[in-house]
Figure (cartoon, one colour):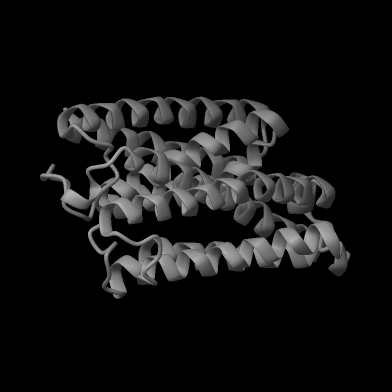
Length: 271
């Protein structure tokens, strides 16, 4: 049942991705509403899959790369739907939903068997820490998508070639606001995720901080986004600079999440 739900979810995400890309080329209201319905339906199916996985495993299904990549995609889609409903910008999905599809495709390449939980993960902090972390990651994915859109839109304005794409994208002010709202929502969540992770580490390993590669890169990621937030609030970093830093920050985040797991060995290698 789980395998079937997973495949159906990927199917919905794939079709939704195609429709959002079609909307990018031909921004018709009907296409936008159909895209929204498809991604919302996929999200519900993804939630059901995650719930079944939780029931089967007996713990929060986020303890290996198959589960973590899937949960990351789930968080991105959920946060995207919230932003789409708030700003009524279907075209944002053209830049965000393909990322969720790629994560699901990557998830399908890793072993999906349910295995006994590592003793270090048997804690009530598993759900709290990981959920906070992935929702923060998802909001930074929205900032990433808005940042790319901002640079594209700015390019059209500076080149004075206001083609069809220019009229399809939101204004620079709207994209900058989405970037800012994503950061102000995601950064506190990332902060609490690191704090709860430290508390969990003390109960599991007897120390709050051990400079494990995952911990080190999480701190680097936190400093990058802290610098961006600080720059926006104190020195007026907006527009192009904020968009570029949001894009760079997200690539660092991806390395923290995936690159560290695949390339560096440490206490978090099993996640």
